[in-house]
Every structure is written in C-alpha cells, then in structure tokens.
Image 1 (cartoon, rainbow, N blue to C red):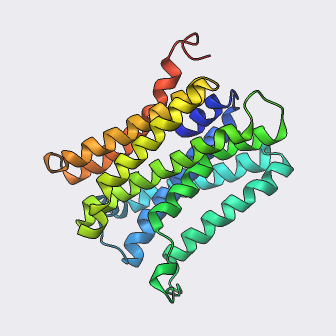
Image 2 (spheres, helix red, strand yellow):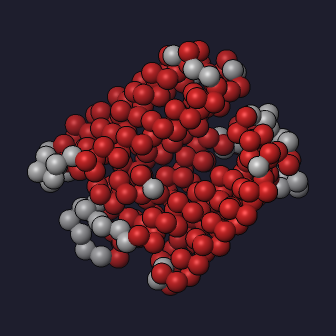
Image 3 (cartoon, rainbow, N blue to C red):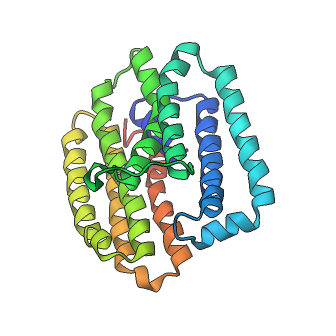
Amino acid sequence: MAWTLAFAWAAHIRLPAWPIAVVALAAWSVYIGDRLLDVRNARTPLRPRHHFHWKHRRIFLPIALAAALAAIGLVAHSMPYVARERNSVLAAAALAYFTSVHSPWRVPYAKPWLRFPKELLVGVLFTLACATPTLTRITSIRIAVPLLALLPVILIFIALAWLNCHSIESWESQSSPVYAVLRPAAGLLALAVLASAYAALRHDPRNAALLAAAAMSVALLALLDRHRHALAPVALRACADLVLLTPLILFVLPGRLIP
C-alpha cells in the first residue's frame, strides 16, 4: 500500500480507495497462500514464518480466501473493462510464477544459466503490481508528469525489492556465493539511486524525493546486514521488510517543501 501510494504521489495522481484495497488484499492472500503451500510441498527449507502459518492454517486459510474474493469483487465492480484487459497480463504473469513455484509437475530448466532468479522475478511482479494503478491512469489521462519520467523510478524500486528478497535469502541460507554479492549490490544500487535523485531534483522534485526514500531503504538494508548477528532471525527478516516503508515519509512532508 505504501509503494502504491508513493508511485501515485510522484505522478501527481490521487488514487481512489479501491485499487489500494485490491493491492493490499491480493498481497495478503498471496503471502498466506505462498507460506501454506511451501509447508505442504516442503520444497524449501522451512522457517519460523512457515511453521507459524501452518500452525494457524485454520485461521489463515479462510482469511486468505476472503481477501482474494474481496479483491476479485472490487476489480469486477470498480475496474473499467479496458484497464481490466491490460492488468490481466500482470495477473497472468503472477499466476504463472505462483504455479511454477508450487506445482507438483514443475519441469526443471535444461540449462542452469537459463534460470531466472526467483528474487528478481518477485521484485518485478511486486513492484509492477504496486505501480499498475498509477501507470494505468498515466496512459489514460493527461497529467503533468509523463510516463517516461516514472519508469526509472519503477526500475530502481524493482532493484530495491530484489535486494530485499536477496538479503533475506542470504541471511537465512548462509550461502557464501549468495551472500558475497549483497554489500556490493547495495553499494552500487545506492550510488545509482542517489545519482538518479540528483538528476531528477531540478525538473521533478517528487521523483527525486521518492528516489531519496529508496536510497534510505538501501542504506538501512546495508545497516541491517552489518549488524545481522545482533538480531534474532525473525526480527532481522521483519526489519528487512520494515525498512521498505520509507516512502511513507513523503506524506508527512509539508506541501510547500515538495511541490
């Protein structure tokens, strides 16, 4: 919800309540379903979050189904038919990913170098889902901020979502090859974000402010990595998601500070 609102804020768009609710409900249902299917299939190492969801599955499963049905109902009731056609592509991509991860009939790739990193795919789907309500309105109405101005911001937030997933994976797996690229990736991403924010500052202060919030998230992820041994694994993972909420700072800034 925070990222959905932030993309709309950067594009000078005021979203109605229903697309924000759809994003929240869909993310909630997918998250619960993913955890429960992880336990059922047991293809990945199980973490405390998996055991917690499985222990309380009789509560979580009805919640997930109710959230999914509510999201579908909002889409059917409020989303225009043209937008529904465009957004169905993203929904199909998310469904294909979900099926490929949890289907018992998955076919392994023939060549390892053809495998698309799971963390990057999650970052792409998550960020596009958050940005879609804004992108749909940018392409359908005339606004002050063109579509091309927002695309670099979306790409950087995809990288931020990937870094979040990659950090959690490296902390939990303790895999040296995976872990070795964490800090260099964070450093390169921080430099790219700061450079982009500086470039956008003069002609698009809202994009620059949103990029500054992304840079803050990157810095906080790097700080968590440095002090990872001082935190319990559950707290470390929760903090990795918590630091992605830095765009909320934009909504408490005075309007005269960022036009």
